[in-house]
Amino acid sequence: MIQAVIVMNTQGKPRLVKFYNFLPAEKQQELIRSIYGVLCSRAENVSNFVQADAIFGQDSRLVYKHYATLYFIFVFDSCENDLAMLDLIQVFVETLDKCFKNVCELDIVFNFNKLHTILDEIVVGGQVLETSSTEVMKAIDDITKMEKSSNSLVPKTVSSRLG
Image (tube, rainbow, N blue to C red; front, side):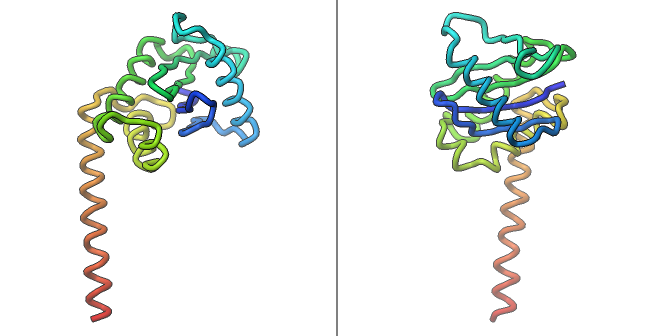
């Protein structure tokens, strides 16, 4: 099971935090600081896999990818495959790239809701739902179309009542 998905910048500022088990906000902040401490102290030529027992408890692992100014981090237990989690990060980033045309930190900051929607299409309740970037994009496009059609109905209804 996936325990958490975190996107943070290279200064340690979280841009997306999603824990799939309840943790108080103080504990979440402590864990994020611990993760940042581990990641910023690692050499670039080492593995992207980290045993996270000291941070998240026994049987926890962490995998991350560093793209430009962002770390994409998945924390999971032994029920998940390390390489599959690394691939899932790739799917997440590919989908973000398709949505934002070369995603950057500002895209994440200003499109926070879309970021959560994309993640929710990939992972639900800590379980992997979809591993195809193409399928995730189809779902996101459908959601966007529905949002646009519902938004276009509101002004017509309001304007007809006013006129």
